[in-house]
Length: 272
Image (cartoon, rainbow, N blue to C red; front, side, top):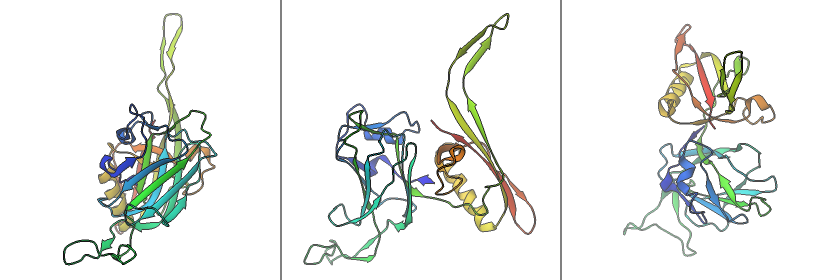
């Protein structure tokens, strides 16, 4: 899953000054947006300039939301919110993730001769091709014991479903960056670090269409950006491979089999 958001796309109704909106775009989940509006946090997203012009995935990462939090995602063609289409987002302790039917963010508005948007007598905007280009996240977590809401990243973009997948051929390795030095006489000196996961996937022979999609994904994300990786789609009760915020590590190499079908491997490393 690839994120389409940029800083200029987001407005928030209440932000604590030392934890600004800009923090949502830091690759580190420890750098967070924070708001004291625990009972009525509103985050508005303008998706009119999204490059892909399609959205089917929403996620919240690095959050402190409790299991009693209400999370609603509203969608509309204009920045106005009465009577709009809404999605209820289910809470998860780690990555809050929601798939939905692909939405076109490039709604075509009908214009008058003056260039103004054409509206009905009741004030409704008229479009020739329907889509949603504004999104609003409403969060109510009034019982949050921290007294504030914090979010590391918000995700709004598209996902790539890999077919055939690597469900039967993958390795999950737990690593850490503890610093350990042994002195004379095997005296141990150590500084505790953090633990993370490394995923190594080998994909079977794939069609030209799938290979092309993987190549495009790698060119877009590279090693510099991040993705959310889900090895079991909606299944989130297998702790080894829960939806993971991670980076692609290393190169992407295709091994030709026959008749222009290729095998390939990918390595993902968990971000913190």
